[in-house]
Image (tube, rainbow, N blue to C red; front, side):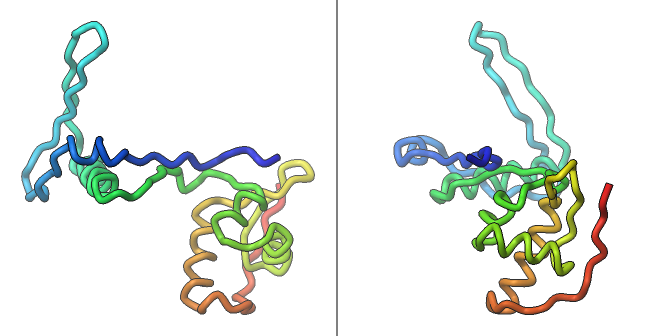
Length: 143
């Protein structure tokens, strides 16, 4: 059984109704996160502009009813995990690795591909209309 590498979060209809939407941030706006601890203590954290943009996008998606997940682009995925993202079978992912369409490395006997490389392949396949096309060769890295 494959490990669960993506955990989606969403808001219930009730939660979405109770939370007011955030007005679009303007240049120079500061975002502060206020945390009320279980024991009544308060903590305020000022977010850098890049983080504020991510929080703004996250809130907008959650309030519109979308489910979201946050992943690191340098996360290594097994062929099974990559097949979930690509919407293909595991053997097809392994084939794509073997012919050079998807960069990977060996960890012992196991293959691992970076999430960012899987997403590049997904974008390429989506742009090509999901046809089985031969992509330019990518050099495999074995460590």
